[in-house]
Length: 63
Image (cartoon, rainbow, N blue to C red; front, side):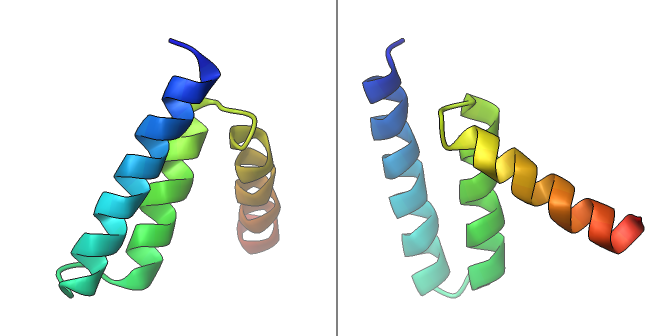
């Protein structure tokens, strides 16, 4: 699977999550976490800043 294929799949899943959020079945922060977890699990180049953000927040909260 190429990087461009992963980006297309992630974009589709993000769009799907946004549409579910618009139907008010899930909250906006859940959509944000779902999309960030998608990038993290796919380990695209966007996955590394997401991982660093999770580490920064986690170290700040749980120290």
